[in-house]
Amino acid sequence: MQTFNVQGMTCAHCERAVTNAILALDAQARVRVDRQASVVEVDGDLSEAAIREVIEQEGYQVG
Image (cartoon, rainbow, N blue to C red; front, top):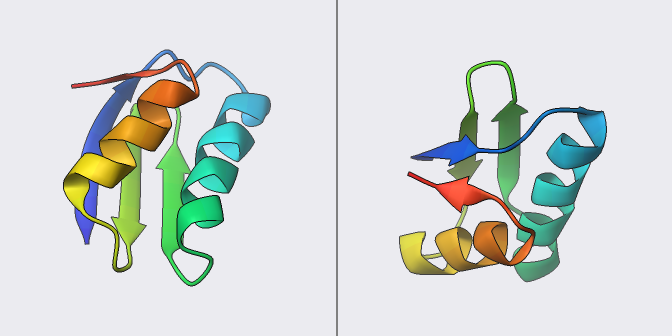
Protein backbone atom coordinates (compact mmCIF):
# COMPACT_ATOMS: atom_id res chain seq x y z
CA MET A 1 0.00 0.00 0.00
CA GLN A 2 1.35 3.39 -1.01
CA THR A 3 0.17 6.57 0.68
CA PHE A 4 0.33 10.05 -0.84
CA ASN A 5 -0.38 13.48 0.59
CA VAL A 6 -2.38 15.25 -2.13
CA GLN A 7 -3.24 18.93 -1.93
CA GLY A 8 -6.09 20.60 -3.77
CA MET A 9 -8.83 17.98 -3.48
CA THR A 10 -11.93 19.85 -2.34
CA CYS A 11 -14.97 17.85 -3.47
CA ALA A 12 -16.34 14.49 -4.56
CA HIS A 13 -15.44 15.32 -8.17
CA CYS A 14 -11.78 15.63 -7.09
CA GLU A 15 -11.95 12.22 -5.43
CA ARG A 16 -13.41 10.65 -8.58
CA ALA A 17 -10.89 12.36 -10.85
CA VAL A 18 -7.94 11.04 -8.86
CA THR A 19 -9.46 7.58 -8.48
CA ASN A 20 -10.34 7.28 -12.17
CA ALA A 21 -6.92 8.51 -13.28
CA ILE A 22 -5.20 5.82 -11.20
CA LEU A 23 -7.63 3.11 -12.30
CA ALA A 24 -7.02 4.05 -15.93
CA LEU A 25 -3.42 2.89 -15.43
CA ASP A 26 -4.22 -0.13 -13.27
CA ALA A 27 -7.83 -1.27 -13.32
CA GLN A 28 -7.10 -3.80 -10.56
CA ALA A 29 -5.70 -1.24 -8.12
CA ARG A 30 -7.54 -0.47 -4.92
CA VAL A 31 -7.73 3.28 -4.40
CA ARG A 32 -8.93 5.09 -1.28
CA VAL A 33 -9.21 8.87 -1.34
CA ASP A 34 -9.83 10.91 1.80
CA ARG A 35 -10.08 14.55 0.73
CA GLN A 36 -10.62 15.72 4.32
CA ALA A 37 -7.21 14.33 5.28
CA SER A 38 -5.65 15.05 1.85
CA VAL A 39 -4.63 11.40 1.57
CA VAL A 40 -4.68 8.96 -1.34
CA GLU A 41 -3.88 5.29 -0.71
CA VAL A 42 -3.17 2.94 -3.58
CA ASP A 43 -2.77 -0.82 -3.39
CA GLY A 44 -1.66 -2.16 -6.76
CA ASP A 45 1.22 -2.74 -9.13
CA LEU A 46 1.92 0.87 -10.12
CA SER A 47 5.19 2.55 -9.22
CA GLU A 48 5.23 5.55 -6.92
CA ALA A 49 6.43 7.72 -9.80
CA ALA A 50 3.56 6.64 -12.06
CA ILE A 51 0.97 7.38 -9.38
CA ARG A 52 2.49 10.77 -8.60
CA GLU A 53 2.58 11.67 -12.28
CA VAL A 54 -1.04 10.76 -12.98
CA ILE A 55 -2.28 12.64 -9.89
CA GLU A 56 -0.29 15.71 -10.91
CA GLN A 57 -1.65 15.46 -14.46
CA GLU A 58 -5.11 15.82 -12.92
CA GLY A 59 -3.99 19.16 -11.44
CA TYR A 60 -3.24 18.21 -7.83
CA GLN A 61 -0.02 18.62 -5.87
CA VAL A 62 1.56 15.52 -4.39
CA GLY A 63 3.57 16.20 -1.24
